[in-house]
Image (cartoon, rainbow, N blue to C red):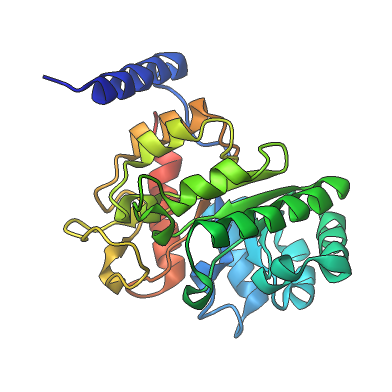
Length: 283
């Protein structure tokens, strides 16, 4: 017999499927440029043009060195949508962060994302509450510049302790009007959670998602030391992308970024494979 939780989850998914009419397709697919970090330094302009040639329309960039990359982004035709900010800068706050956000707004970016908590900086609920305060402050700065702030997860935030998780602490202590979440659905799954359930749980607070697939047999863990082979092109692993995308659409996700931390060969080939799957997928 299904549990109440399973029944409610199935009911919500059925409603979302009905609303979507099973005929939607992603209209705009983006790339997190971390995926091409091994080839970008050698040929930035060519790499960006190749990404656009595959069909991708948006980029999520990383902060370091972006000013030098900006002319090539402009020439590529890719839309600058989201930026992974410098975590140290966000933690420190102040004028440097304000200037950085103002510059990103001038470039046309819509989101500034806190990307990662270094292992040495991770702690318990009090540490995460302190980070929440800093994110709220960054969110104020983003709002003043016409942007929005978000937090990008990995797996450690979902480690259950004392009846809660660090992710829940962060969600409870950030202002929904100032801070959203960029759910990395791979890491949600690695932590043993169902991406569909997590999207429902965070309805209205997830404007951005990272799309990458997970290899069958990948163990549940709460750290980033998964095997390189665990990272798969979208459609090549175990995640149910029809359910994921139907749910993402129904809970208000606006931007979808393919990110593959590790690729078996040319990252552009992996990006092409993911794009072709997503562009053809009707949900």
